[in-house]
Amino acid sequence: MNFAKPLLRAATKASAGLLCAATAASAWAVNDSIGGPKVNQLNLPYGVTEISKAIYDLHIWVMIVCVVIFVVVFGVMFYSVFAHRKSKGAIPATWHESVKVEIAWTIVPFIIVIGLALPATKTVVAMKDTTNSDLTIKATGYQWRWGYDYLKGEGEGISFISSLATDRNIVGNPVEHIAAKPAGDNYLMEVDHPVVVPVNKKVRIITTADDVIHAWAIPQFGVKQDAIPGFVRDTWFKAEKIGVYRGQCQELCGKEHAFMPIVVDVRSAEDYSKWVDEQQKLAAAQKEDPNKTWVLSDLVARGEKVYSTNCVACHQANGKGIPGAIPALDGSKTATGPIAGHLLTVLNGRTGTAMASWKQLSDTEIAAVVTYERNSWGNKVGDMLQPHQVTEARSGKMPDGGTTAAAPAADAPAVKTSQADATRRANKAI
Ligand code: HEC
Ligand SMILES: [Cu+2]
Image (cartoon, rainbow, N blue to C red; front, side, top):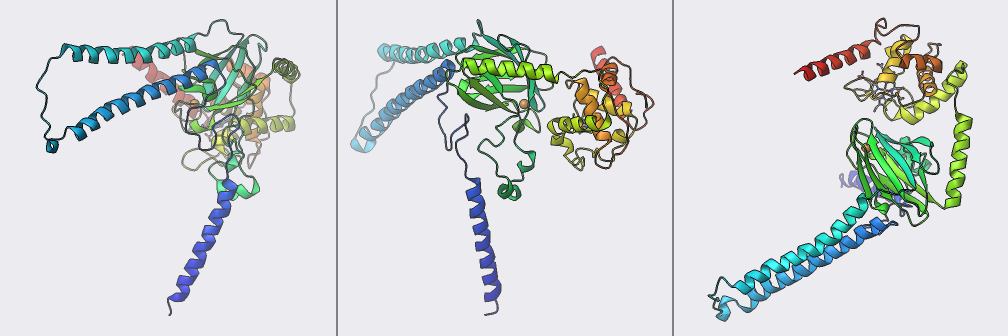
């Protein structure tokens, strides 16, 4: 009976494990995503736009045609196999080249194809008709977030970056965090700045991208449009119901592809006007004077915000990076070396690596994030970058504390870039 004890212990352990799993499972309970898919939803969403409804109806119509064809063809086939089998003494017919049959099997499929193609073409043409829009918004795909610029119509001039709002700490790390801070029903489908639009207004979305191909899609609107670097594409929707609608980037665009959701908040005309008003006031209040001279602590505080929105996904909140993939900024030669090299890395990125150019950030944001990195974690350089120095750097005048060529560890990016440029030139010459 010696083996009984460990066996019992193992059994107890296993049941404890099961219990744990069960508790975890209850914490995992999901509800319908607000504006996204429902739990166990199998069918397409009916949606809230003319186009999404047309797509849904088209899908049902094609499905019906397919099912009818299936039933008729297989019905005839099985009936023939059953009723005219050899054991019943069936004798095959001997006729061939029947004009009647040949005409029938040409005309019937033709009618079927027309019956499918006509409504499909009508829908596709309607999808492409972006004329007479009330509002035009440009959506730019970045690795891995969306930028929105309201180009035309009420709200013109509003512009913001929309990033994932789900706490990165619970991503891929659910069990430890579930008790402390359970993921909401919109886990990975929520953003800090949703696109706000008015109800019952035709919104034209112009898509493009800064780095690789992304796609802007909202299933509830029946909208999906690739966002291609160097090209401009467009699509449209006219939401008929107030509410929040969700989608995701739908073109595999790299490591964080799953983390760039799209959220559209459809509001009443009055609420939309209110929002526009707020945004414009906010923008005016927040308009940062690029000539303002900051003190270190303010710049570091501002930089921390910029860092946590844009850089933590790779460099981590503690600045330790990801061993083997992302260098630590804590103790990094670049982040503690000459400021010019540091700035250059952030401004230009590093060709051929995941470190993209961040030139789309404002001068203040770049100055702040660089200053933050130089004075956080174990880094205590004590110097800072003023926004006007970023302005100058954009036009080629690097700040003191090392120029492109002088920075020892930090000139690596410059060398890499020029090598890449040389290769590109060489390739062009061929
Ligand atoms: C997509 C992932 C990613 C994001 C987001 C990202 N970086 Fe990087 N970063 C990298 C990688 C990878 C490198 C290493 C590049 C190389 O191999 O030279 C790097 C290098 C750096 C370096 C140089 C480190 C050194 O020791 O050489 C700095 C400084 C830096 N990043 C700053 C930033 C800042 C500031 C942001 C946010 C505005 C940011 N990074 C966002 C991936 C990223
Ligand atoms: Cu993408």
